[in-house]
Image (tube, rainbow, N blue to C red; front, side, top):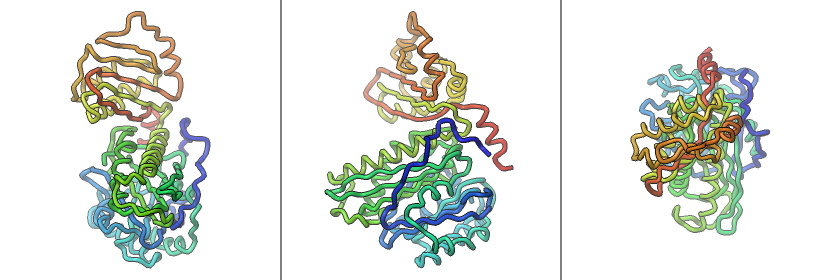
Length: 409
């Protein structure tokens, strides 16, 4: 049993029901004992869907399935299993995915193309569909709209706590709800960590508009988080809009009436992404890296990720060592424009180095105290332009090795 992350929130937030969404879970024993490991969500007819997926060139069978059917724009359900990623499993994996989808489609009385799928867990083992399909009909008969905590638990693998978030905003004077859950702890460097996220809203938003909103939100959140620099074969973010709030018609993503919704979706995705980092395998410190003064926002993000993914930076922070030289190293290797003699580095708000050297008379005391905390801030100013980015990561401890060395056993 993996101990709960010291960075975990006190409790799972209260996620109220979203009109048009029902949730069922089951314990199949596929890998985990004594906890749900299979999720089925049912959406009211006409629900719109959007998705963002891994850019890994070795995607899982469920990712292939979702990509194939996303263009239809509508969803009646999503089925998710934990314990087996059904990735790198060839034709047999595709057939297993289709079998699970077919069972869900039968249970929800819809075409298979309206069912979306996701799997998370061990790579390279064919999903034993026969362990999952017998549970699906009973799940469909025992659903409720307020089982978001159960849903978040059912999709966990090495996660130490279920992750969820909720927001309520107005669209054209109509109140709408957005709920989201995510799983992820290791293999996290989304490029669109093993990361799956599912977001549902009762807003009436067309699929193409929802897609634009989701893609933008993902770039600001999940794609700004990293635990170990490894992009999963299974990364999937799916958003569903049931339309039950009956808000005024939205025709495009730039509609001013959608501004509050877009901001709330961005916020919920950032919330979920940070929770994944806080549950990073073996993590003891949550690290925020701010890069400013870069040649462009893209350059700033690449530099921030170079710092965030550096094992030397992450182990120094784990050891509570304010080794700013490692930050310099990570900036220099990022492949983006940087000038040594203009660079400044701060930790915990204290400027450590600037203009190519350590600050004269620098007192390491306040920084040493900051490094002993659980929330670590690293700020880099390149003094070259207006580009900026924020990335979230965690430290690298022996716990990461222990969890992954034992993962398949």
